[in-house]
Image (cartoon, rainbow, N blue to C red):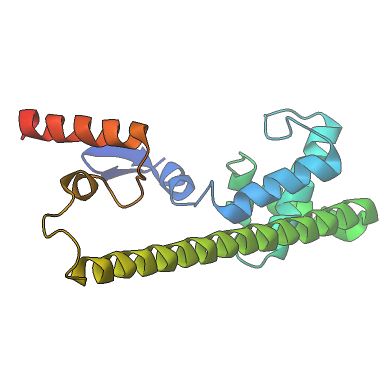
Length: 188
């Protein structure tokens, strides 16, 4: 077993290969959730040889491979295994087992649908944030135009200037702004 030094510590090559995989990504989470929904196995990632759990792990490895983005080693690591031959065996088994192949295909389709809806939700929320920022900018320009009016008092409203742009004229926001100002004076 070869040890590789990285950052002053010794690691095995297999450990370093497993660390480079990006887990917790949107696609990985979608594959796990789709496997859970379709197979109904809640604890399929644990090291058990129970047939239902092994079936769910195999289906997820095949679905991950169907995306075309993962190697056999990465597919195996996604379900908590260290050996890539298990993923290869599951893919060869899918050629013989129609139920396994259909389940993996359903997991793949559902995970892609989940990713698409999450990306759509994200883009909608970003669009809403941009629209809100545009409205805030328009309100700020309106306030500047009001300040340019010579009939107004020349002294600025210091309370409004201390508050952040998202804080409104409520008593609670005035209290927060006052406390923030006190902290700034005390801590510098």
